[in-house]
Length: 306
Ligand code: 3PG
Image (cartoon, rainbow, N blue to C red; front, side, top):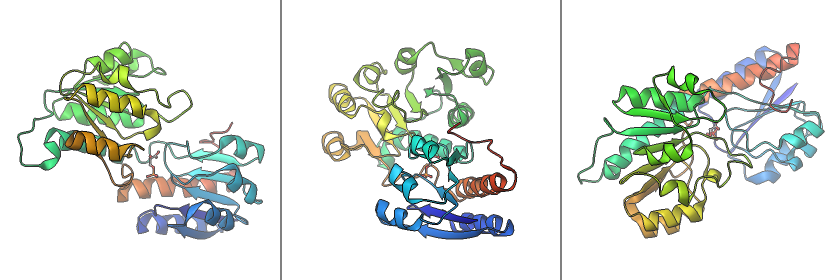
């Protein structure tokens, strides 16, 4: 079988080498397409692929239609809002992700971002410490749990809300369950977002929640830019000169936010939450193994479009 690894943002060389070893040892071939330029390039490359590995690369219905031999696509990572699952299902293509493989890298970045903003983006001004502060975790999945554990070990008090989890599952991790989002936002100095981008969550965090945050609070977004209502964010930052926003994904209105609010906002130049050697290797190898398992025995454990 021919496996295509298509990544606009390349994996670390160790991760690509690891994929190659797993794929070729199983008797398959690997083609690598990195830093490619737009959908057309992916459409051209995918024509004869039996399997596809991507990161945040968009696997659209056009890509799926062009991939006449495609049987499986694996998003090497957690969030799969970049996959058109309906198109996959219609074409009988199995879609998978590799949950939890890059969670630690994202959680470490969330903690780093809190410290970066607390220390005024490392400018020579008086900042504050995160020890003793309160952090609210929005969604207590793989990343949220790790952020909570790291925050607690740094002396923070953690609370969390998760609509899909019983409060006991949160409290057994030493984290206080919040009643709802309103309580989470109003009761924490930091809120760290770990929800996926779905039709329900898109634009769901806006003016009302943000202006409930206590004085000097900071919103930390290592999830997806789509979950933020950007107009609401702008208005909240305008009306509350003490609020801060730090994000791994620049909002569409970042230039305006920077101009208006300067050091109260910061976005990484490109999404870097999962961009560690360890996370690359974990997610890449998991993707390669899942493909080999699927071809060898029909293993569909991480199938998304069931
Ligand atoms: C994920 O959903 O796994 C992360 O956002 C990582 O995305 P990336 O592979 O594009 O870095």
